[in-house]
Length: 350
Image (cartoon, rainbow, N blue to C red; front, side, top):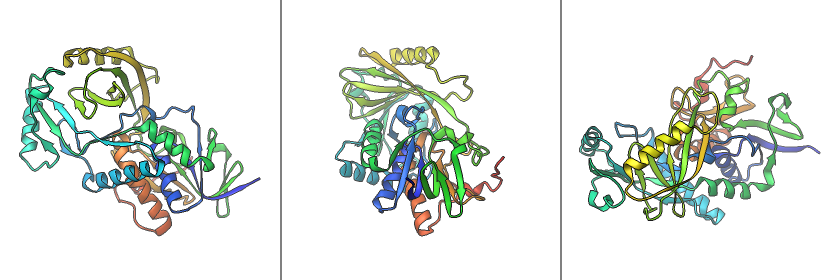
């Protein structure tokens, strides 16, 4: 028996879950197909929303618009799902060098509203703070495991557990057909898989392999994120996410002994308290060369859309741009020019 919906979504990671959620909030029909055995960048991400970025400690793109919207969205989501998803978690910067301390001090005094001085003595029982500390305000941690589980519960009636195969997609007069689903449009939110699809494979995807350790650190306060040359992020009780790396040229997605040893060396140098390694996570991020998302409808095939390429800022960008995409599809409102996938008129199908 065929099922008719307005939208078919491929992928129930961070982006697909938010897109489903906003459609459901507007009582718009949809179905979402997801292969839970497919590797997901969301399932191994740190879940951090940080308004500054990089060694130069500069404010991230669109942060003054994106961050308030993201915080409000996660708070609304957790209320709707009766779950704990978001918590405020200022970043404690443990400066790894005098150069990084100087960079922080410069930004602190040049109108970076998110930076704060703090008392390094408060952290000396936990860390080696040779070059002092600083703080980034307005940072948050998202429990992505709980987010995906809660999301799956609220979209259960529309969820299809299946591997999506492009060869099974058919164009019909007013939309698409896939297996027993007829939809007006199909939206791909399937991470690195989109780079292999014929309609979007010419987009400038630059996937990178990321790894992280799950580490037990008893006694370390879990209301902060800690950052040196590595990040230490609250995960669960006494457990912390530790990472991460960006490996652009990788032969496989197996855990790397070199990465693990690098994290051990960094933890040994940084921590004054004992720790135990519990797990080693690996994922592939759907980053892109422009560091801007791919959002919107294909310039030649309006039945096909994409919402992807959020990169390392996915936790903050995903609510903002999935909501913008729904508004575009339903209300004809514009998509931000730097994110609109139609900025690539060269997209062809081969």
